[in-house]
Image 1: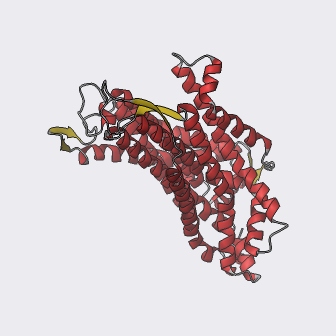
Image 2: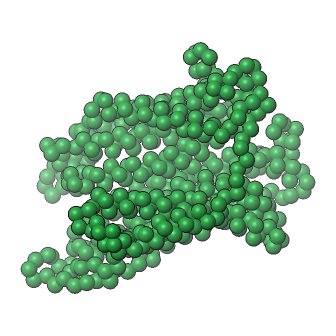
Image 3: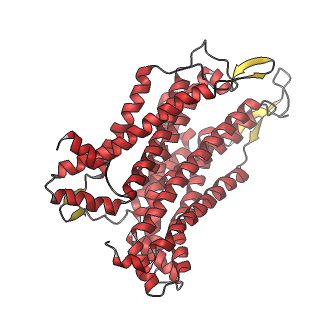
Length: 472
């Protein structure tokens, strides 16, 4: 297949295809902007600045800022993956038609990969343009403590090769992701034949969560047992990363198991039509819950760890110093941004689920099912598996923070006292930040509810009985 034909087929399609490309480009643009900001922080030199935030002035804290920007890319990747499902049935039929016209399976795979890479390339270029424009628009100085400082590191520009690497890497990653997503798909002239999905495992998520959360809860004792406590900071960080990945994997995979178990428990017992529809959906497609909740659960897990660290650090330092408190406030903003991105992905996934099942909804409405029943069913299908997942994620995060940093900390008896020879230091028990955890859990559940409710705006048009006259 010639390159011109490949590009024309990759950029053609219906309104759903245009929306999918636009949303993918938007996610890539935000991801590119986050990576470019991380590069800027990484290239801040000793002669640059000074800046308004000590996070940028202290070179030892740059790694944490870079990691924070990197973590923001996780929900962005999930968002892009969920956007790739917009208009999936129509895209499947279009690609199957190409097979009927004589295209090989490899040609069709290249068309799908080219569509994703073109969208990602456009988004990466848009992100680069926003980054360069932002350097000019946000280049301003402020006065703090009688000193003129820069508000942001607009005096630092990453080398051209690093900017080019970001712009090139995102389309390549998008093409690779599309190829991996189609590895289990047999593209035939009659449609897409996917391998049947197995029932989600029950023991594996529980084992991963038990090992990961349990290991982080007893992290200090585990490090002492392994003999890497002194001088083994990189090794200890690697152990914590592995345990965190195990716990996160258990949470994400466990949502599918929870959905399947809840569906089997509710289906034979409930009498409300909405719960019956929701329970049957959870039995039929339990993996949809994992795809929907992955970014939200990761954001809650990281947020709970941060809140546990906040109370530890503030107890061990002088509370009159605003540096640590302002630092944690910035981290909270980053977590809020991650939750907002995860909510956008949830909105896309919920809306696509409603649109893709329009014939089913139309048949139910034609048979006499009220639309409010279908709306409550859609809400229950999304929220029932997610609520226990969010609570478990918050519990895992706070256990991890207390396991790594301990449950007691040495700090001044008088929190407002300045450090000095006469300062009395004593062991202080670290309380559990119930208020912050409640805000995190309650806010996440509220965001999920509002996002799913917003997706219900597509329900009326998707459940019109005239949909029964259209092709599936």
